[in-house]
Image (cartoon, one colour):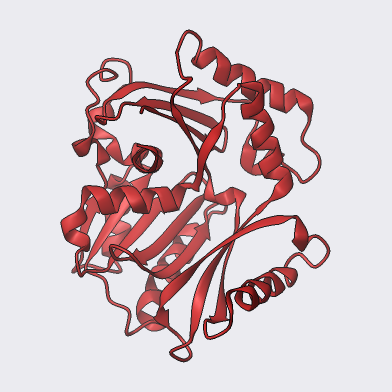
Length: 304
């Protein structure tokens, strides 16, 4: 079964069709008038926005037969509320979930019930053997209703929805599987307005943080976040650093190397396990910019 992946990332809509043999059959990038990270103000999106997005997607898919495709939706991590919270895993699953919801009320006391919640247990123990940091991911239902409405107008049935950083982790682990066997590695995602950081192995998350890059001093805050890995987490080790995202990685090597001069820095290239010959003449410089497609192809791997 083929996969159709649609990424809603800021002002960009990225669409890719991928065969079960990992052939990239189609790719298109559409720049819209709306920045989803800014314009989906809760309860204020309009039908005009829905029609605008659905028309762009429908036009891009005109003439394509996608009835039997698995549809994957990729969302920018900026659309989600993400936070680390301590959780006692000796409690029952219902109590654990209640405690996580209680933490959410600290940030959204009046509308915490309006969020769809998922969470990941952080492997590293911080307090006791039972109490672990937990990565809370919460998406507001209004935002998800807006996104669902777009695809209803496109007559597309969503099978999988994922956050870009989680999808990138999956992709990098698949492409560089041998590097994650019994090894922890640092994943850095450089987006237009945000940097996501995580330390993972083949099956666990050990650390997560992010830096907003909408100010002139974001490099200082990013370097501080990297430095915190040593200063606050002296027992947290990793071997290699993997980079993905929208920013040219050449400009980042010096910055990262200033903190981790001894580490091997690898620019993610998921195209090594995909055949992109069908779009090579259509997408400029794709053979040198595989890092840009890491998240999109990560959710494709989950769909195939």
